[in-house]
Structure formats: C-alpha cells, structure tokens
Image 1: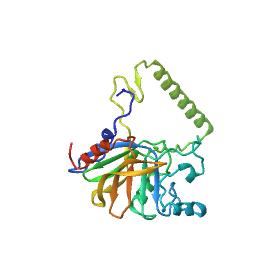
Image 2 (image 1 turned 135 degrees about the horizontal axis):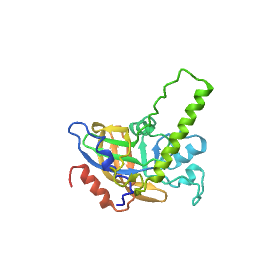
Image 3 (image 1 turned 180 degrees about the vertical axis):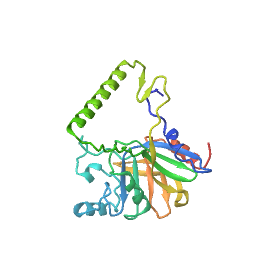
Image 4 (image 1 turned 135 degrees about the vertical axis):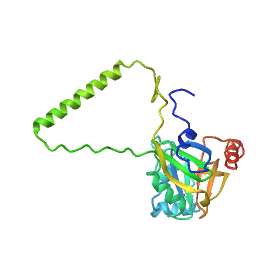
Length: 249
C-alpha cells in the first residue's frame, strides 16, 4: 500500500460504529448504486410507458440485461452509465431498501467512495460528512473604505499562505504530508439498517448485463435488500465475508 492511498474502509468505519458493545465485522468501498425495485427504473424513478412495458417483459426486474437498453444508450457506447456496484432491490417503492437509498443522493454516480460496513449492531453506509460553513460576523460599518480594506487584508493573507506552501519542501503523498499524522477523512453515517431489520447476509448471484456474477446479499425483513457486487468472480472471497459476518475468522 502506498502512503498516497486513502485509509482502508475498516479504518474509516471503526470510529463511527462505536456504540457500547458494537464490533465491526467487515467494511468495503463501492461507488455506483442502482435500483431493482418493482415500479421503478434503474435510477429509482417511476416507470412510464415503454420503459414500464419493457420491464414487465422481463418479470419487472431491472436486472441490467443491458444498461444501454434501460438508459437509452446502445451497447458499447462510451456515454453509457457506469456499471452497478451496488443494487437496492425490493417488492415496491417505499420498501426499506428504497427508503435507505434515498439518503445517498442520486444513483449512477461514481464521485463518492461510499463505505459499506456491517457490525454486530447494524449495516451502515458511510460517506463524506457535510461541510459546515462558519458564519462570518456582520460588521456594523459597511463603508466602501472598510470593504476595500477587508479585501486587501484577505488578499494579503492569501499571498502569505501561498508563499508558505511554496516554501514547504516536505514530501506529499496524496492528502498526507511528511512528518504529520495521516489525514483521517471526515465521514459520517448516511443511512443504516439496525440488526433487527436484517434477516440474513449470504452469497447470492445477480444478473448484470448478459452474465451473472456472485454478490453479497443483505436481506431485510420486508423482502427488500442490498446486493454488493464486489470486484470479484471468486465466490470464495465472498464466502470469506460471509464467514466474518458469522463471527468466524
């Protein structure tokens, strides 16, 4: 592992999953999520017209026979959406999986490296914490002269900071700097399923495109769930995660 690589998902999850008696079982990073919920398209929007009839022809499952057919891009098109890494599935809109996904923003995006973590208490999805912008106190005197002075002072501070950075010859490894503690990303829990709502975690198979691939399926009490399509075709790797789920290893 290079010093420039981000911290591992378990390291990010541990400080956030810290209820009394809680123990982290495993964590992984996955980006792009879609939906396989009856009545919704792959983006999580209500099905309409031709899209709804096409879905009915394949049993109401998004299933990703071809992502291009669903989103209107031909196979092999460079503009087609990125492949799924996580699929929220369920029997109807409003199911537990669908509700939880609503806390993660727009589907089909690759910009956020979500951390998916299972502990003895919950299955949680962690992402960057919201950035709080401090409110600047309003000055009672809003004269043009004072505004000009504040602007000049701000530019001066910016030039000093730029000079300090240029004079700093320490090695940089991504977000990490030589001689300083490793940068800890600011993450928070965006959505979670309490353990009592989880009926099982097991290796399953999910059709993606024209093939099937193994996944780790988190099943919920209402028949919905989450499929994690790990970057692997070896069920033994997923079996290892299932073993960790059961407290083995």
